[in-house]
Image 1 (cartoon, rainbow, N blue to C red):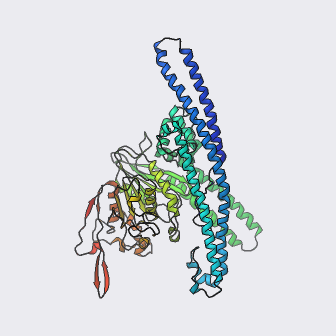
Image 2 (cartoon, one colour):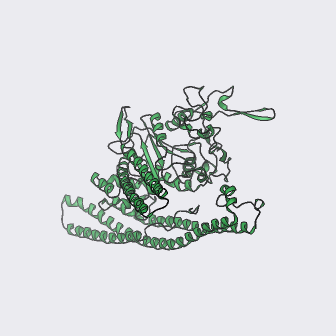
Length: 632
């Protein structure tokens, strides 16, 4: 079992690549000085010449000479910063390897101490209910209690070594921040980026754009800009042949690079999906060869060996089938007039199986810009919850929302990294902490039309992810929490959001939700699993979930609805059946995305009968009358 709670590798990164980049800058400085010298010679050669055409040329040459000098000086300065950065990352890598080894050793010791304290019978009876950091209560333990002390000591040792390792991640974050600040302090970079963020390598693409020389720009250098707006500027400066060459050379980078237009990301990810299919087919062939060789050497348990390999092969084939389905999927797209066109292939705008990341786009694409057309008025990003993965991430929810919102809408379904796959994992906030900055950057990379609004929607665990993205600097016009686990670990309310504290926030959850309804933090409570509940946060408007068919007010309450064939109680089904098209909840989602009229939550009535409270659903009260709000 992997040690829980370990931060991302503090020593991640290509140290030699950083040094190569520094060397590139030094070579660039030399080249720019040579060009500056040539420009000065040209000026001297033109000095005795008198002609109107020459007089017009002199200022241009003078300007170019100054630019060459500025680029050379900035390149030298950047090389020095990057050399220091490479040294620091190399040192962190050494220390992080040792710290991680210690943490993993300490975590393994927990299992050893646990096993020593619990015999097999105890493990079967009570051990399953204990998390890794739980120790059997002393009052329930009948053996030598020193075993419990050693068990607890192993847990404490791991917590200490984990903290030491995670402190190195914090050190790395500070190093990255300080390096970016040092790069921004270089005068030319400050001018190019307008004081914006720039990371190691970003200067290459930025200076190329500034100097009008983009022939040498690579996908990696563009990615190093770490700023979607700058990436868009560099991309727009390229001609079609240059763009196609970059897609062909680095489809994995371009297909997942925030700031690249939708059409180009889709084209790059089509290549990535095809490559993943080929890799899966090669893996099946390898597994078949290994299986056959193993069977030749095996005389006992042949069926078990064969089954084990067949299961692995079947899993690979399942992935291949899904990826092929993405390429062959037929989609319906309406143009500005409302005319529906059929196209082949899902619009995949994020595809990186190594990071379990995928996102799709639903809506029209401008053939000229490859992006959201200017006539679109409503853009949304939908973030799913627990159980989401690269082959099951709620893509149909986004398609339904976009179809209901109409031709002038566009909806992204985004699962930009690993999500918890079952309820115990969903108790851990690290997934949302890891996903939040990715969501923030993805949103920043969307070219939202000037007259359109951007709504970010988070369902279940995705709600906590959206909240942490807001805390990390997400910019949006509206936020909608749907059956959210919370507003994010450590979030106490809207005041924690630097750019969205004043934008409209909405929330909904079925009254009997037993998936996340029981873990909601009260107003201002920081000790809940995923922060403040969106249902009770000041400034958040709660919307009604209502009935399963909004056109039939007497239809089944969504709290009492059982999904046909699901076999689950309504308390489980109602967590996700909110997305049923045509339901009150679904219509409210569409209203928030498009700026329509949404039904407000109807407060429940509590009666006392026989000394016991009886709760009557707000929409079942005798005096129930729907109340609405116009979405801002």
